[in-house]
Image (cartoon, rainbow, N blue to C red; front, side, top):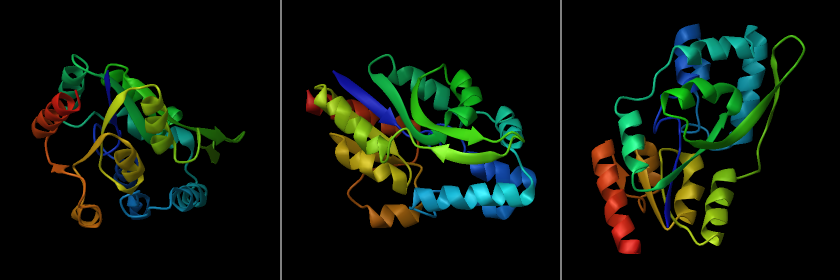
Length: 203
């Protein structure tokens, strides 16, 4: 049995923090894992900036509520699920993801949680476990699944390396140059074809 593991932001939906930066006019929020590979450092920066600017969880959720998946993402996901089990492994948060999951047909999502204070500010974030994408792929392999994975950023490379086969989809060139071992795809059609060819090869 083969399982496909996909990142969420940049793969199936737009980058939430970039959309938030555009809505608020605060360019510092455009910083993502494509720019900062240290996730803890990135999140501490974001939480401090939210507090500094007086922005609460509800402000982020309002932006997300107006977002839509990337063009073709729902069809790609629906097509995958006719042949594979699919798990979304993301470093987003359940408090962010619900509107997107609804539009994507409620795929299985493993991600993290946020903690808010009495005033509605994001006070802390809680990882489901450190390096959870890598750990999840290894757990699936321990259950005798063959895992095929795709992502777009630094924080996906552990998942891609642990999988039986890993691919980039929509990555920036700076990341492609650092990780040339992962084949690059720029559209869902060629990525799906790569998944199917890999699945046939893995048997």
